[in-house]
Length: 230
Image (cartoon, rainbow, N blue to C red; front, top):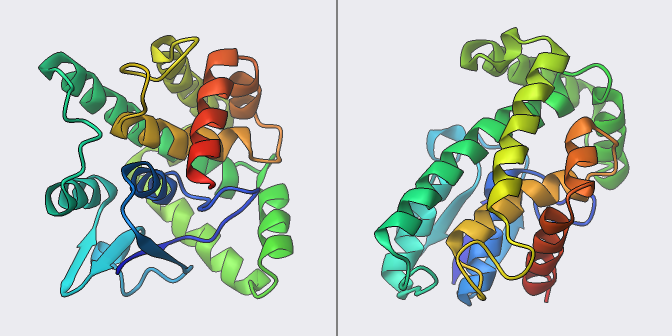
């Protein structure tokens, strides 16, 4: 059976990282059986990044590569009816989520206003984590942020970037149904992966305030959450 390796849960979602939760939701929506293994150490993962899957002799990393692999091997039809224009929209949304990821991560590990609450939440839910280990992860992420670019922003400027990403997403979510119709497709799993890690996040950041104030985003998040939590 296919095994998904991703970060542990937090605040009631199956993975506290948007990319792992995206893959989890996709597998659930696609009806592909899998085991879910939660790990913190990504040193043995492809490119030392989570999530990744092991499927027989195949090991596949990178969330988009995983989705393409599973779609091809298991004949997933979630996106079979999409038009070329809808597939282009999906690409643009995926890139927007990539940008939002850095703001979300920065707000947790780097922003002094929210880091202590995030640290304490991780320790409550995962008592095996040590202060030393968390500080090493914090320092590692600070280095990543600097070279990626978001680490050179002031906290409010970084947050503004994430709010702009969320505003773009909110403009695409209908009041009923999903991005491309009455049934969820792959892009809905992707949006859920990130929005759920904001909406269910028990720390009142501006990102959470934005999501909570947009009924369509909340409805979409809760609908996918219900579908993948069965």
